[in-house]
Length: 287
Image (tube, rainbow, N blue to C red; front, side, top):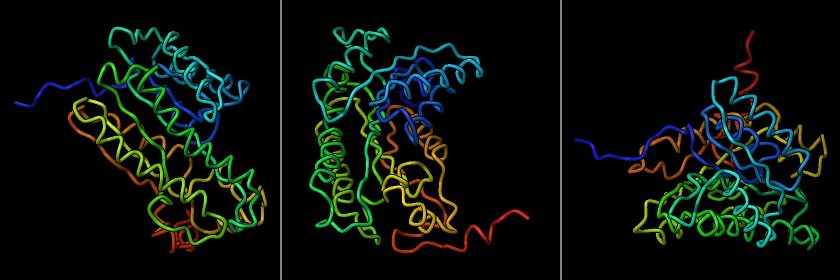
């Protein structure tokens, strides 16, 4: 007889998503809303978050769900505002963390890449600081707040999904990636150790690694140089954010006794970070 475990449904689950105003974060929010999850959306832009909140409510309604959605404006680089945002979100979602309840899921997604294709020494120290403060400190600050203010450590239960990157495991062949690559390798290491440190609890630490995704993120990465962006994407039929969101839904729906510890979601043309099949799109184009 299989052991009893928590429900695998996302309906009624309380989920906090960082970087929720666009791209992968927004797509995950919409996908979770379609499953009936209650959502706390966190990012720096209130206007963008409000627009996403309307979209996720509409999505939930179209799937027959009535969900609670709260918008929290905060910068992950500011730990005090992250703590306050998590506490406020818990209150809005009626999570009484004081009696052992907690958020069910954290999607630790906020991150950025700047200054490519300039090599490390030609990048501004300000851009380097922004990347490291966001991708390292901010990444940890969100997990810290979720374990404390979000109640997971007290409840000894919950799922943290760290959205990292395939670049955390393979050295990128393109220039300007030293800081971003190092930060993603750091995220991998942090998640692995946090998984060990939460032994004795039912807290799951999962890792979702997107490959090349066609979003604003890669545009930002090359400084919105359209020529560089088009050249990077040429022929590979990159993922769209919704592809990653489907994986983010699937990997948390396993029974609590099962951890989908890490998932790589990449375009089939991305054989490795060193080798792309740039004939993919032409070869598979619908006639």
